[in-house]
Image (cartoon, rainbow, N blue to C red; front, side, top):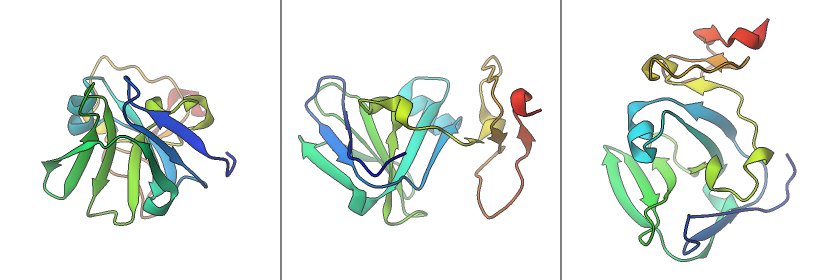
Length: 147
């Protein structure tokens, strides 16, 4: 990825944002909360430092989705936009699908794979963590293309 500015928006375009710099990480999340927030079987996140996130237009609406967690969405069309948690101060997580060029973000792992929907067949080589990743621990499994 480059340090170029990347832009994104909600479905109706009322809220627009951009990021600069390199992301902290990009991953697929299968947790129940993310599935419910997006009404989809999983979501893909990009994490950036708060200082690299720039609201360009509009004002999202915010709500507390669980203790310590805040999610935002467009007040006009309802598109989900971000996630922040007190566990990760100083960073914001954005939905890769909301960017103008989502192909510029390559995820490097699956988290909460243990919560995935049973019929969700993910055929890739990425490491899979049954809960959160990090702390230098090994993944719980690898995707079938990892051989």
